Image (cartoon, rainbow over all chains, first blue to last red; front, top):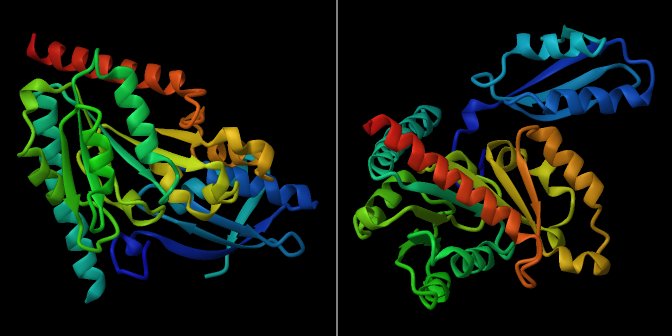
Length: 83
Length: 225
């Protein structure tokens, strides 16, 4: 995490860019961000309401991309990878 | 190449933390890793906790600080064993430092060890010290945005003490947002709103701590039986 002193497990977290489908209003952004942040390994979520483009920082050891997709599905959205 | 080195450092730390955990378990000692920013009130929380519980719980403190012994000096006035760790500028404690500090304590005469980490909302969250729980102190003067800005600290914590609530009327701190963000990051966390200066709200922290210590004692005794 700490890029200043190079300590810690910076390598444990990854940042992915995805597109989330099913966003209808700006209220959806808050729902998505809150629900994903509740997953154990998700550290940061930033969703663009107008096109669904989303950046997610997460620790893949604690939360998999499958967990993220399932969580989105349970909230009525679905994930499309940009990779 | 650097990535591999960092991975090795954490791996080594985790192995030593496991050894510390086993050592503390063998003595039935409950250990708290106390985290938070400089000035959040970690040492004040410790002072209050010692004052409230030292007659019923045998406790010791390990104080982490960069260079000085200012916090250890404060704690030593309260009549409990205290060991100072100076990191020499290092921004966090690691398990090897704590292992050496434990050698200076009589583990047969303790129920609780509180390890006050270096004041920092980033790095200390990454290093396990063999503790049972992580407790994070966040003061309202730091602002309600800190949980989302420093998520790992709140993801890893078992309890958050939201300190300095006596200053709420003088700040624009948004308690509802802070609470919502903390539970969003960690739905299972325990939240205590308190003022270490006035002692307000601390009873919940004391009861939580006593329950955890009691649970640990019971689990150790169950293994022995």
